[in-house]
Length: 507
Figure 1 (cartoon, rainbow, N blue to C red):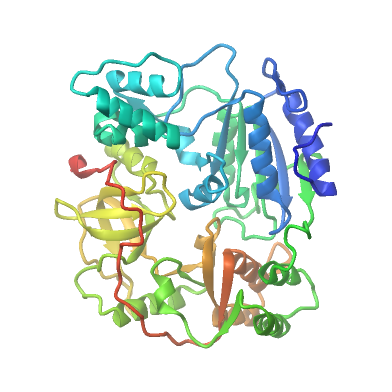
Figure 2 (cartoon, rainbow, N blue to C red):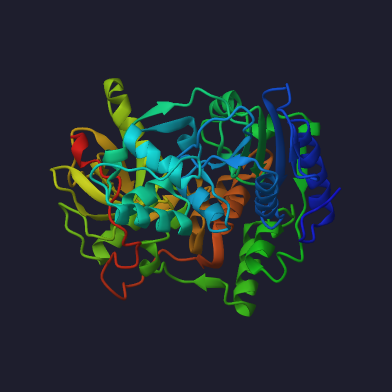
């Protein structure tokens, strides 16, 4: 068996062999780099599970590269080339934009599950440009589009293989070349799904309708979806369809955050003992911080992670007060979390437009200012490939002690937002930030409650998910105090590309 050039751990190598055999049954020879006809079996699922530091993402990335080298065509979600009889296809998926962006930063062209379930319908004349850029058509002549504009599109696509981005570089808007969205009606081949612990049974069924071969990558120590009482979808697979990875010590060496995450597996570690481990780690490594207060400057881009909803509301209220946010509006730079889409069934196309542009439930956004029409907002969607959108918005700001949320402004229908300066640990699952603040008094309350989930103390699952959201630094906040901001809220740290996929015309 020929392995990638990097050195795998023993269980990664065993998993690679199993994955190679699984894909070989589907007509993809990873060892020989050759493609055959698809296998006859459909609905096959294989799961690769492991805790933080086990190398799941590394294995996924290498699997993508091997499939790409074998000639399997990657479907990115924003464009598909012309269908060929002998074409073999692959999509790398994640439940959220943020999770997909983590993979894209590693060179893996991931997209959201929604962008694969629903595909864009292109205007025919601009579809010719897309075919040309993707290498399946001749350079077109488009009325009203200069040769210089086509050159700009080609230069953009050479730097970043994004069809929408290239068309926008040519001076087009999303509404010029995307005329609508439709449910995918044709199968693809292979799907690689990251953060599979966030999937519910319905999503897995939807994916199995599209992909005859699915590989799920998930962390069994995370929290199961709220609407999945049976646990994570890979827990229901037969044992022979689950591959478990252990911690790769050479990759996770000297990482105090991962050390703390794995310490939670020790049944003898109670909450007090765990806080002692956090304090010890903070004393010897600046990647772990024992803090007496919440750092308000960080809340604008990475929310404080809490368990209780009441804590979330209090922290958001404190964040807005300390920034002197107006009672009847938002400040540019305030973080928002998309809480869903409120549109009647007759406006299904508008719903698909919003969701395809990244405004799915749980999406993190930054409010940039009001749109051109009443009730519209200009937004930066964190982790989206084309982050700037303008959408009809319903913003709900909850306040301590009040049952009904305060609504600074609202369109009649559209995307619904909650404030994002603090979020529950459940909603943070699938996301990562360089620095994460965990509100420890909430975890202490969960420990006192004595609740369990899937045989584990709930506080340990909460703590595991919370601290593994941190890529570089973990701040363990032990007191209910808020620091003063060092500067006013701003937006100049965000990607300054123009808003390409505006929804102002949707009304």
